[in-house]
Length: 81
Image (tube, rainbow, N blue to C red; front, side):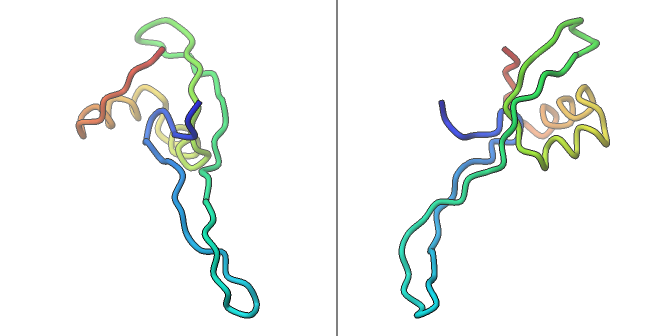
C-alpha cells in the first residue's frame, strides 16, 4: 500500500542525507501517516482513513465533514471507502 494521505495526497519526497563531511546521499522523507476511524454524520457510517498527522490536526479544528466539503470544493477527488 502506498504511503499517501487519503485526503490531502501528501506523499514521500526525496532529498539528500548530508554527512558531517558534506557528503550527500539520496534519502526519502516519509509523511507521518496514521490510520484513523471517523464517523461521518451525513452518511451515517464509519470510515477508516490513512491520514497525515497535520491533516488530523486540521480535522480536529474544523470537523471531518467540513474538511471533506472544503477539499471537494477545491476540486480534490475524495473517495471514502
